[in-house]
Image (cartoon, rainbow, N blue to C red):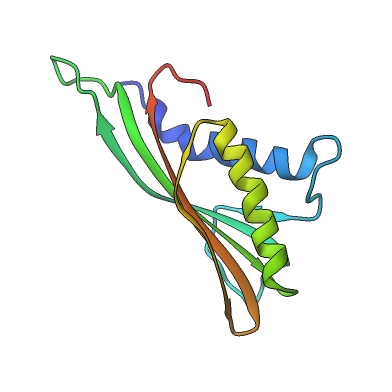
Length: 134
């Protein structure tokens, strides 16, 4: 069985990081990006964390041997040690990139402060077919 769906997070994360950090005139060249766990004691600021929340099979075929499509959902959490505006600004730029990849934003950015760390988080989802390009 083709396991194309196991590469979804990597493809999304790589494109998101590239668009936020490395393109000409990138908006956040000093942004740290990771799919790892948030550990405020060792965090470099600002940091974008991406976490897959679920991959659910959609569109089964008759013999039920392949995965034709999935419903993918994830969460992004941005942390900053400066202020809420920086975290929210990064969140809105990330949303622009994800909307360009045809994702739906299911929870708009929520900003809060936790132990003097400014956080913005949001969730996104999309149905992705086996032949879709991200």
